[in-house]
Amino acid sequence: MTVSSTPLLCPDPEGLARAAALLRAGACVALPTETVYGLGADARNGAAVAGIYAAKGRPSFNPLIVHIARPEDAARYVVWPEAAARLAAAFWPGPLTLVLPLREGHGIASLVTAGLDSLAIRCPAHPVAQALLAGFDGPVAAPSANPSGKISPTQAAHVIEGLTGRIAAVLDGGAAEIGLESTIVSLTGTPSLLRHGSITREMLEAALGAPLATATTPAAITAPGQLASHYAPDAALRLNVTTPAADEALLGFGPVERAALNLSAAGDLREAAANLFAMLRALDAQASKIAVSPIPARGIGLAINDRLTRAAAPR
Ligand code: TXA
Ligand code: MG
Image (cartoon, rainbow, N blue to C red; front, side):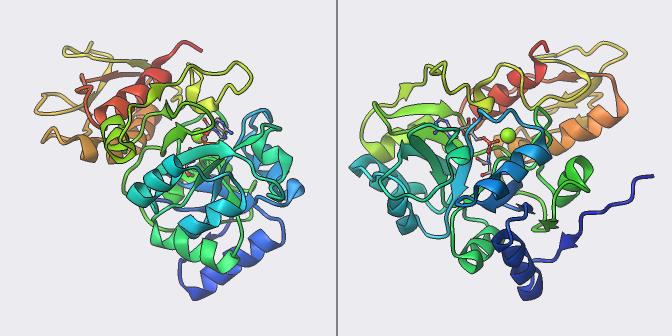
């Protein structure tokens, strides 16, 4: 039996104050957001940010997302073009990350951006994240709170499972409502979609009033969310399966028979997204082969298929 050496904090005034004090002291604290749990540290403190990489076992060339309390805080760190103002007005606070050029005097530790001259920034909507960011009153760098290469956590217990003993605390905000990492849009050049999420291309293009290019990954960045194998369970994963083999546990979608677990028996894509990572974890713990029902490639289904494809990629 493993004994948890990382405390769970309640999101009450005492727990929030404790979490903010830990961040101020340069420690790493996991926090809930509406997408997935993040592993936060003071983005201005290089040593604190190094703690994130150490806890996750993450290759240090991968840049992190900075979280801010209020949309208007963004202009302190990044250049703020009209396109950013439009997207922020439409989707912040919320599950959207914008990549923008760093501005002079930004104060963000270079380890956060892995030396790039752009910064990924997001204003999360989760009330506990909001309360912590407001109480801390500074920028918080936070990747998903999982060991590098593993499935993103959507519950405090998942964070403990992967990182206990390696981080100072986990602020418990319950199950993440969306369950998939934020949509990422780069505005450093031609606006382009870097990562699919619950905010879809159609929603973004409507808010921008212009089409979005599809990202071609710059070789120098190699975003982990863009690597072929990521979000990986230990079990072998087979996708678009209508007839599972006898030794496969079926992760169903829609009215399928023999599903070990069903992402959404009603065929609701939002429900499926919210369940995806927790159900992958649960099946991973009990089976060595997982088959997944076909998921429609529309709306948030595109982001679900993106994560599943990476989870199934050879490694
Ligand atoms: O929903 C989310 O986005 C969660 C929560 C905690 O906010 N965070 C998250 O972080 O998913 P992470 O580190 O697992 O993924 C961040 C992605 C990576 O693919 C990273 O490479 C990319 O953002 N990224 C960060 N800075 C970038 C930059 N300057 N240019 C391009 N991509 C960047
Ligand atoms: Mg991640």
